[in-house]
Amino acid sequence: MRSGDLDEWIRSLVVPFLAQVDEESLRHWRAHLEVERAWSVLDEGRSVGTCCVLTRDVSLPGLADEPCPTSAMAAISAVGVHATHRRQGLLRRMMGAMLADAMDRGEPIAGLFASEASIYGRFGFGWATSSVRLTLPRRTTRITNRAADLDLKLCDPEEAGQHLPKLFARLRLGRPGQVDRNEPYWSDMFVPRTHPSRGSQRFFAACDEGYVSYRSLPGSLSEPTVLRVDDLFGATPEIEAGLWQFVLGVDLVDSIVANRPVDEPFRWRLEDPRSLAVTALNDSLWIRILDVPAALTSRRYRSEGSLVFEVEPAPTWVNADGEPEPDPAAGRWVLEAGRTGSSCRRALASEQSELRLGVADLGSALLGGQDLISRSAAGRVQQLVPGSLLRADTLFETRPLPFSSTGF
Ligand SMILES: CC(C)(COP(=O)(O)OP(=O)(O)OC[C@H]1O[C@@H](n2cnc3c(N)ncnc32)[C@H](O)[C@@H]1OP(=O)(O)O)[C@@H](O)C(=O)NCCC(=O)NCCS
Image (cartoon, rainbow, N blue to C red; front, side, top):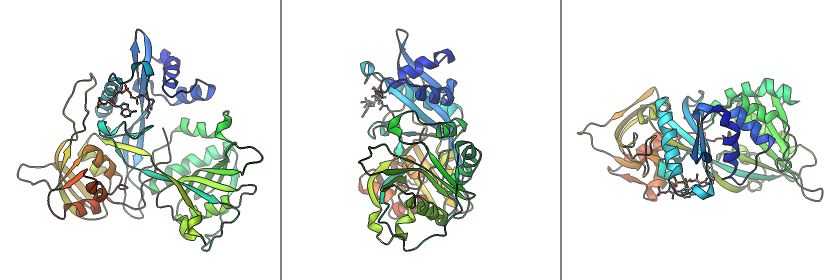
């Protein structure tokens, strides 16, 4: 894409999403787009499809009480094809171009947030992180096991801009699945929202070891007021509980909603644990492994073990020219894992495969939040040698569960 075409690229992108070009979308994409990693499909000179890759990293499972390691990740975004050109293979070609570019740059994985969960499995992406949407009534909630109250300060956007990015960079390494945030991301957070559907301004309450950002959702005066928590990060579960206690103390609010990790511990501090209702379970980050040894040895393992496994190729793998090619993740591999490190290599002919799974299921397993046993029960993972399924499941699992709170 030529850089002069940026505004045209944005105008084309909003069409498949049934959206419109406004100041917010122009500002967002002008700041975020890496022009050399953006693609347009042209038909008679007009853009009819767009996509881009953002250069990001993601936290991977680590050892207890140590910061999580990270891996470079090609973060795929802005995928859209105009209604007039759908189901003609444009996404397939754009995906080929994006993944070839990621491999040229040595990125071992690609990641995305999917608009529809049926689109990306064919390209080898697996559902890797989940979130739960929690709703909590504010006025009636009683806490039986209170955390210490925090010395929080309400920050204006300038103070928040000084403090929060550094704090987030440290705290995101407390869980796998957390994507890094760059300067344009934070700028978006601190700019007043112009779109009324996004709710009130954002409020930021922070201390040295944690912060919460929240806003009220739009509604009329006669409707109950909902406080939406956008970020809630603490260095320990105790500090996160202190942040929950703080938002429970915000007056004029009837209920609190938040997208949180599946293993959110605050429930177990409540007199009525049922009151923290799960209103949705959603997929967040989808992972596609491009380089199996690099991806698998970048994360840590909490138990010792080895596994010979066979990865089946994705149904669709094409190169940058849209031609079918062998899937680079497919084949037979040996993982030797332990607390002090791991290795991964191609299996020798003499080494018998113990487990067979698709590349999408391996992508799901990488961040440790998707169990292989239930995938096996669904026919997606085959145990070829007795005992190997439980061994694989134990090797890949992690705590705390992965969570991705940074969209792209
Ligand atoms: C999703 C979208 C980009 C697909 O583009 P496209 O050019 O029509 O896709 P392709 O023709 O390359 O299709 C590739 C394959 O994916 C399948 N596919 C495409 N869109 C699909 C969908 N929404 N659900 C299920 N399968 C889909 C096709 O059937 C095809 O399958 P095949 O390989 O078995 O033949 C397009 O429909 C779109 O712009 N949708 C609205 C915006 C959106 O949701 N974007 C994704 C953001 S994450």
